[in-house]
Length: 100
Image (cartoon, rainbow, N blue to C red; front, side, top):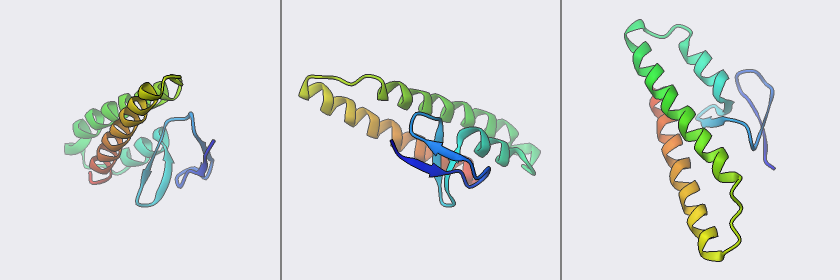
């Protein structure tokens, strides 16, 4: 399992936890959202709420995909592609949050 360090709390980030990557490095989902809330322009609070719900859903989906472990080679390839698709979507959502 991969291990990283959260740039917000300096705690360990492990595969199997909700985390994402930004230009600053890896960050726990909760640390990331909490940090963005601080000093956020009140006019952007609704956007942050919406984007954070989307990112939470994407990260939850990624964690669920990790539990599948298909045996058939075709199913393995499909699962890998789905994982990459959701990972890209989570990266896009992270970028939108980072830009707020």
